[in-house]
Amino acid sequence: MTDAGPLLVAEDLRKHFPAKTGALFAGHDTVRAVDGVSFTIERGRTLALVGESGCGKSTVSRLVLRLIEPTDGRVMFDGRDLTKLSAEALRKARQDFQMVFQDPYASLSPRERVSDIIAEPLRVHNAVDGRRAQRDRVVELLERVGLSAWHGDRFPHQFSGGQRQRIGIARAIALNPKLVVADEPVSALDVSVQSQVINLLSDLQVEYGIAYLFVAHDLAVVKHIADTVAVMYLGRIVEIAEKRALFARPHHPYTQALLSAVPNPDPDARRSQIVLAGDVPSPTRVPSGCRFHTRCPIAQEICRRVDPAPQTVADDHAVACHFAKPHPIPADRPAGADRA
Amino acid sequence: MSATTQPDAGLQPIAAEPLVGWRGFLRSLFSSRVTIFGLALILVFAGVAVLAPILAPYNPVEQSIILMNRPPSAEHLLGTDGFGRDILSRIIWGTRPSLALALLAPMIALILGTAIGTMAGFFGGRIDRLVGRLTDTLMAFPSLLLGILVSAALGPGFFNVVAAVAFAFLPRFIRVARASTMAVRQEPYIEAAFAVGQPRWRIIFRHVVPNISGPIVVVATLWIATAIRIEATLSFLGLGVQAPDPSWGNIIRDGLGNLLGSPWPVIFAGAAITLCVLAFNLVGDALRDALDPEHRD
Image (tube, rainbow over all chains, first blue to last red; front, top):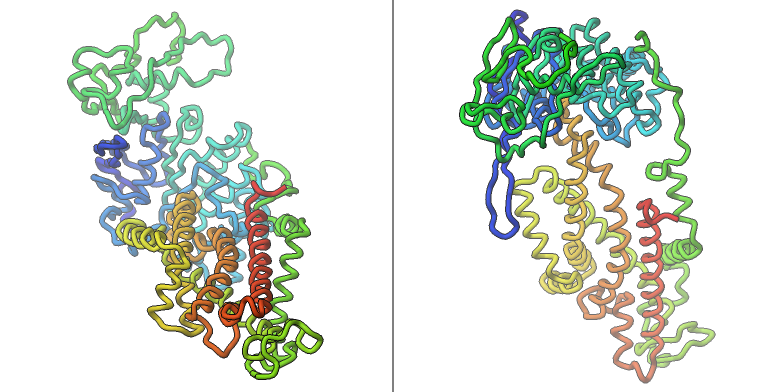
């Protein structure tokens, strides 16, 4: 084990899906779901991956765990290249990285008791000796995520969404993993329950030193839990920065638009909403030059032609934009609206 | 917020869980008198098959030149056939091959079909394409024709008929198992099982097979009735149970030659087949409806 160095390094990950087009005359399109994504996750830290639906963030979460095979790129986990492991070695390695799913209803097998669902990773990896130890561990996990021992005898359909997500979290942490990938773990939950689950995840991080890759479509959700935030657009990371820097000084116009969409509880705060025109272009027809130019309020001629390379604008703050600077969108923002 | 260690809300048992609840399933299954009638009929046939040596008043293969072609009477309740054999005894003994085949053939097809269909649906790719083409080819034949083909190739005899009927049913089971597996394969809990690091065989046996068993069992019950018909047909054509041993099909075959002189063997054996097919169809339909909540009242 190499305790030095980052826990996870994703290098230039790509996933292209073939898509058939045409009913009669078959053609082939390529869906560039993930098109060159790199990031690093430090031990015990949280990287949040944020973007609109369809930007490829869920695909990234599955690439990192190699639940789907990347078209290109590699994932270094704890010094090992996951993309090169054999099926059996990968299966064994999975005890160190687990996943929490978006859908707390469908991600728990409907026919298994909760105690069996949570014990599954323990059994598969022979993590405990004997039935007694297994039962004790399951009870410990249930209580750790805020449920009770007797909940183990029940079936998933007898629980609320938030409780089910706790069961999913208990399953994910059963083997003391170093990394947990959480794919929109709260987006299916009531707002009132969301913060409870996020707090649970933070507590578990402090207690066990788990690193998170936290996928979300909502910047407000990650504000609490993230250390670093990466903003994705159409299969690429357009801006990645330490959380406070990103919220205070967003450099990419897309990040700005996302931030302006975060609801502000203060009714007196005057703030211009940046409403982007149009929809996300199809990942089968990625725009030339900068992917964002079709919707960007400050796009220039160069954006149509040249794909901007990520440039470092500050420590640990990289932006892929020709006009990267704090608040590049001049717009007609009312004075005092800046929340920098 | 310090609510992290508290459950979200009190656990509310959900009263009506139509999909998982056994009680709802059974209530739906037994809600109709027709279904209960079907079940009772099946039990009667099963009892007759088991107790054939006790129930049959005469030896089913004992011939008599004096008692040929008798109509129903006090001694011979359903009359006698062209060889003077007691028709009631022959029908009672004939229940055995019919029911045995009706249960054996779909069961063999179920086991093999589930194994092949699950593999094809789970692994996809080349295996799936190969299995898919083969299934399509076999499905192009009516199951009766396929049964006759295999029977003719294997020669007559009870177990050859079982093999023939099982083979004729196989593509139906492969299809259902494959389609159900492909649907279950997309479920997030399967992905979760992969993410946990479960081996593939474990995922198949623990998560896929239990979740596709419902539709497959229904298909099996629906094909039992067809199996009875096919067995009767094959025996009628001389490919099934061989004379002098009785089966419903060959009772009709024997009686056909003298249909105008003495119709009783054909009438009573035909009635036995009809009742048995009806019983299994009734129960099969009820089972399908009970397992499919959309059909439930």
